[in-house]
Image (cartoon, rainbow over all chains, first blue to last red; front, top):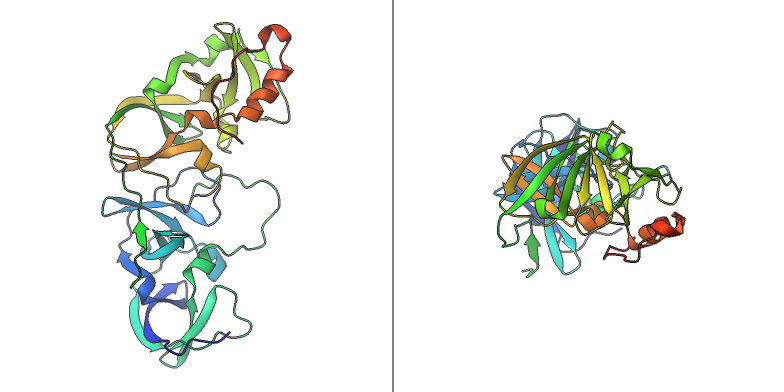
Length: 154
Length: 176
């Protein structure tokens, strides 16, 4: 995978568990405080409910089982990003642990063993942090049992 | 700059509506009050219920005859894939031959609007729900009455019945 030539840009650095990831700042709408997560029965994988933000209903994807292998802590902020659905788009949230930071840097190529939802890496201090492809992340299919999906409540 | 419009679920411009808030397996749902013809106790319904089971429609175990037509009793827990509880009431729908088993009716109230279900929800819930209501700091799914039994399921159930119970009319239902 190669990074684009004009890739020097801003990223939002987020924390999940003890790990850090980044999302292109251009895809982020806002960081919301830990508001109430409303859950109701549904069968959509990775969606864990909705939050109400500025009088609007925003779906929440729990990406932590994919990114860190488990559900994350209860008190979380919500990073609200833009997800595209064909000709339209939808504001969508992912829970994150703690505050986020804005960092600048050049998008480097992803490592060969990075999963499909990591589109590159950005240098943060002495470390390299995976830059997430939001669309690839929320549509990423983990190996799941083949039987009928039960309703998800939280 | 992108011209794409990023939506969050905004309420459709519409008038407030009366709904019945009911509970299935601890979850609260809302259904338009005018979509419900009767609320019956399951005790009252039990004597009239006739067994009607098929693996094709596992959420239906019985039907009752109302006005010479079969109404299929849909178990709300099984419909929403929730843990099974003991229902105490049946909501008999007005335009569809369905009686929905529920645990209880919470209240009858007004919702100011129905928000469309966000596109992130792509599963069966798109058939189950008309949208979402936001009332008293709580999000409640608003039921799509046509979503309980598809036309195919209704046809399948109708074929199981003795000829005298078979309906001459199949109301509009959503496809599976």
